[in-house]
Amino acid sequence: MKGPQLSALIWLANLLVLAGGAFAGYQIWSEIRADRDATYTKASTPVTKEKRLTWADTVDPAATADHAFYRDTMLSPRKRPDIMSISPTGSTLEKDTSLTASGGAGNPTSYNWAIQGATPAGVSLSAKSGKSTTLKFTKATPQGSSVTVRATLPDGTEYAEQSYTLNFSEKVEPERTDAELAAELEKWVNSQFTLLRLWYGPEDVAKAVAISKEAGNATLLFQAGMKFKEEFTKEKALDPKVQKLAAHDLTIVRIEWDHVLINGPSRDPKYKDRYFDVKLSPDPKAFQVPDVSKLGKTGKIPENKIKLPDQPPPDPRIEPEDPRPKESSYDAATDTWTLGTDDYKNVNVDDLAKYAKVVHDREGKPLGIQISDDIPEDNTVIARGGRKGDIIKAINGEPVASMSDVRRIVRTQYNAGTEEFVVTYERDGVPGTKIFKAPKKK
Image (cartoon, rainbow, N blue to C red; front, side, top):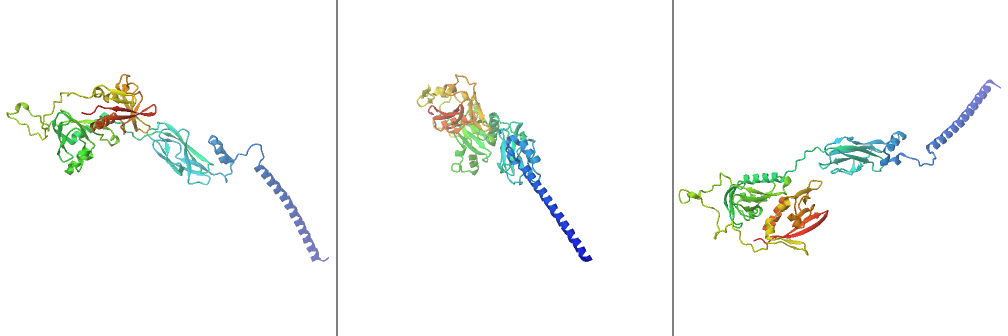
């Protein structure tokens, strides 16, 4: 055998050895890989008597800690979603605050919002879904109230919560009293009108002369029952300056010997539904009382601008005979009280005013007038069918929110000829009505 042939034979033998070694190595590696895959598969899908707990199965209000543990510890970082959060974090809030959610699987652009547990008074969310919502609360919310807000992924697989302490800090204007509002209205009335003369007598002839600054110092003639909204319209008042007075909801109640009684709403827009009777009194500098002792001698009374009646008016100090029934009567069939003149004259809303208070709802809106538990059993209100705790809500369909409303409605409607008054009330949560008939107006 020649040298080259021997050399080729040796190389062929080496190749066979290498191929055999590679094949044997591959077989060993394949067996190791198969064994490893089988072990991994068995470890990743354990067979137990208990149901396998996954991260998505832990979304439960009672398992918040377990849910976070499975997400942050047990899950692979590659499968672990961004942790959900709500900002601002738990703190004390003093006014309405915007809350924003972020994170969670897929970083969604919308979340579901809800308040957990009992909701304190005046607390609400501006939106039930979205990236953000506003936690709103009012002065009705008790100071130091705690509220928990939750943001949840749309599919419900994850949520985040934040708790807040609520301390409403917005300045709250104190409730103004009727006395303060009436004094403010009276001051305004006397600043707008100057009372010059009074003619005192029965209601149908009593008059007063006043000057209106707003109407360019125009001279006005006042008499009982006159309503500015009706008297100074374009049809009745030619002067454009005088027509401005129709914008005021004022009514002349009556002419007294030393003042004019005017009814009008509060000047404070917040209490514009409250009406009061106020006095327009003479200006001492403008109101000149003539000296009677100088008549026919050295003094003279200026010409009176008031047109007097053809016949002298009756003496208002002498009470004329009244033909109307004096005694009150009750009709059980219709549950109606017909008031006699004695009852009507001697018993008025003051009997109710002593033992009544205005009640409000949670938002501060007046519900009506409640009869106090302190009212005596022999009080006229009780005698006419009222009960302790009753809430008077309306008279002839007009809501009442104060004693001023009661006086205004009764007086205005009675002067307009109304004789029957239907009182709507609430007793122990049950609505009811009572009917009262006033004596026919003379």
